Length: 338
Ligand SMILES: Cc1cc2nc3c(=O)[nH]c(=O)nc-3n(C[C@H](O)[C@H](O)[C@H](O)COP(=O)(O)OP(=O)(O)OC[C@H]3O[C@@H](n4cnc5c(N)ncnc54)[C@H](O)[C@@H]3O)c2cc1C
Image 1: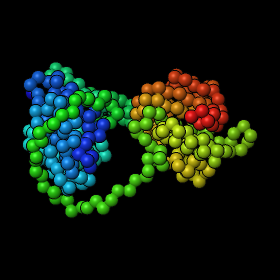
Image 2: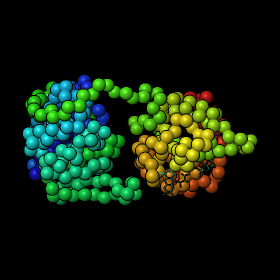
Image 3: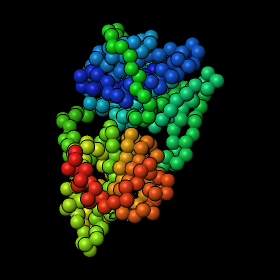
Image 4: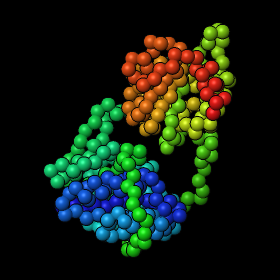
């Protein structure tokens, strides 16, 4: 028997983002599969009613919340104290939370305070022989392992995009207020972030557009065409609302002082030493498709590539479709059509 807690932080209006619903799906897998288990929802934020109402029909025996201005912005010391109070109030043995940047900051601190253990970046959960099992990837997404642990409380964060979010009817949830200390002296005075148009990394985008070093190489006329490459890529990103990835060769060029795409940084790098984004579809352009790059495409379901070379790596079983074509011409034409 386990006491399961869904732990999530609310948005400023008290509602919950999609990752919280995915973590709830994981919590439900345990609650429904482990005999005699109970599910409690524990929320942290300025307010929590909207979020709790959205989960009203999830089968939770209790809705707990630590609320107030001190919990609006995600300050480490306050969030850790709130998580500790919610785990104690619920008597939780399993704590499921979304792996958002806010939760990632404090989850290990909360686990340490409560003498528990923590596994982050879970991509799957299951019940085996009435015990919880958590699956996650290791060694840059090359190996996967399923983990069982006797230690409790066991904190588990679920990577956004891994599970189908829970869905159910909204209603009116009766929240029990839990109090927690607010030891932090930090004050958030504002938030600075790029507008979503200027942001090239969009984890929720349906399409990942990857640019490779070919965009900055000499083309058939013997010259480079970097400004044209920038225009074609930015126009595509805007029209398709795609997220931008890059190959290592391309992102490294900025550090080498070579003419390169001004909006490309190391944060865009996909691959063994880069990111492993999750998008339903991917389009690779001017990128050779070598293994250290393609390993970063592990979670991209449908893959297409544009390359002049019919023997490039993508042709070796790594893409579903390879367009043997000039990416400058092809992407410009697609932009026109879009
Ligand atoms: C330990 C290790 C870790 C690594 N980690 C990573 C990593 O995390 N991510 C990563 O990306 N790489 C990584 N690499 C490097 C990787 O092996 C490749 O060197 C890199 O991915 C090559 O980048 P690229 O395909 O963009 O460039 P290139 O190999 O130079 O390929 C450019 C491609 O563009 C094509 N092209 C040129 N012009 C056009 C055009 N007009 N239209 C269409 N196609 C065109 C060419 O045919 C060519 O295939 C790693 C390597 C090592 C050893």
